[in-house]
Every structure is written in structure tokens, then in C-alpha cells.
Length: 154
Image 1 (tube, one colour):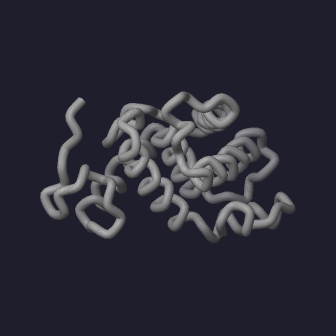
Image 2: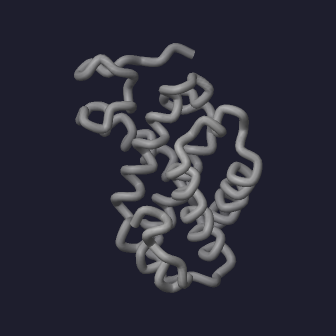
Image 3: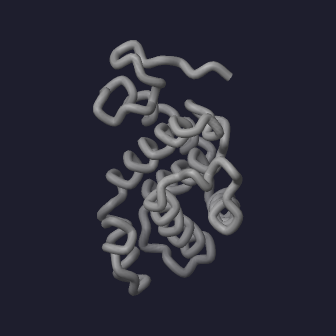
């Protein structure tokens, strides 16, 4: 699969956080992933994130540690929401978290993850976009769960 270059910055599309075109491309991918999120699929996304974090594929072992730490928090949010333990989260937050998890765990996305080292740049950008969008709700979840938000970079 050939990686498309961003016409604005010349880097692989969706990999440059400074470039507005790259950020828009990553946001569009996240929006496409969010269309598939339903109440029934939240538990499946949490389980998939759990499998991904418990036994990361070979290409994910090269990912930054902060990415996996943030994925753990998103997994906790989705799991508690799906089980009914935490229902304070707005649906928008759950959909964004589930879409970000779905995007990160799939190896074939805007830039395939197995293209080391640039394969994770679009995943990091999507995760950063989702993280920034739901940061306040994630802090509230950490307070409810009794974990330190600082551990997850909040």
C-alpha cells in the first residue's frame, strides 16, 4: 500500500501535527471510525483494546510508551461504560474513545503501522486529537475511578 503525501507539507498524510492538512486528514479518519460506534460495539472495542494491550502485535512493540498508557485509560473507560459501572460519560466521549481505539488497533490505516517508524505517527495524531477533545471527561473518570490523572498524562 502506497502512502500518500500531504500536498501542504510533503510528509506522509496525517503524520504532521503542525500541518493543518495532516490534522484534517487524521480527524476525517477518526470521524469515519466513529460512525461505526454503537452501544453494542463499545464492549467489543474494549475487549479488542484489552487483547491489543495484553499481547501487542510485533509492530506495536515499537510504539511509544505513552501511547500504550493512554490506550489503557481508554480501555478502562470503554470497559466500565459497557459494563454499566460508569454511565456519567456523555455518548460523544464514548464514541470518540471507541473510534480512537478502533483506529489505533487496526494495522491498516492512513499510514500502515508496520511501516516502522512512521507507521505510528497517524495513530499518535488521532489519539492526541481524541485525547484533547475528551480530556475533561477523562479527568472526571479518573476521579471517579480513584486513579491519578497524571499517570495517564492528563
